[in-house]
Image (cartoon, rainbow, N blue to C red):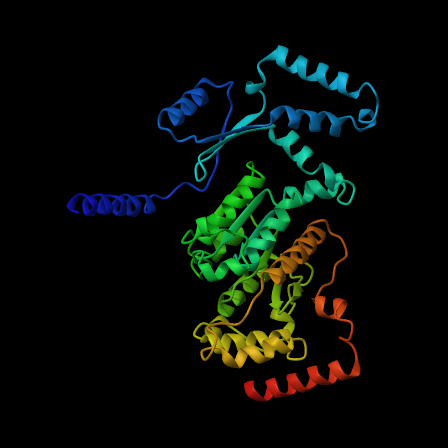
Length: 403
């Protein structure tokens, strides 16, 4: 019995110690043509830090050859030309010495990939010509700031999936909790990990050449200037914060630096995208005036109900869905916070990524607000007189509750 208790305690101690070990959240890129990189890789192997190796390099070469030679893809000689091309590369040096090797410390994985220019070319090949080459280059080389990484996580991934935002600045003070996993695309292996690190890791795994700066304390009066103007300076900012006071700080900096602010809010299953073009007109009222005369000092001490009330005011009572109307008065009674859904986060992420790409490319885009309503498009009776009346009654009752 004593031996079993001792063994159990040993296992518990081991697990406790392992749980305290924090992995790096930035990949390391190696070039096997450099002796110092070979030595570093050998050290990783000796320390048993590489558990998985992924080498799909030949397939990447296949895709690269096709992308560079689209007119040959359907020719009968394509396969022979491809094999001759790869054979020529192998004559220069072993394929293991072509491209780069990337080590992801948080998953103990080593991956063989193309050099950056070819990597980006192949990874975005299927974007053509929905996004043309000039648009893709501007989108990729932009510096994008994201504050708040719940919906912001979906935004970041939507941007990167489309080949945008090589350089990103991510700000959030929070760690991933179980309740976040209904709307943040992250698994239970990330519980307790800072949201900035969860998102950075996901970006790096899509594009190891990304350059990400994280702000794990979130955005504050002390660091917001660095977030905006620290090199590289932001080209655009996405506001997905819950803190209304910090939202004001974001707009003050955006106005000062003349860059656009894009924000999306969940609304049941739907999305609401707000666009403030301080790049075009620095005198644009904060939140387009929907919250009235606001300042950091006025908003900094608001409680959750007060925040919810102002958010609803900003969204507009008539815009808020009936289910949200029903839920808001229950905060602190039967529910702990305003409700949010993963589908709405993904919808908003896609919408914001679309807006960001358009703005960075100087293309026409809405300069105020767009409601993206799945309810309106997919519920057959949504615009019937009965349903309109019900929504109006719900909005009227909700307005009375919140004054």
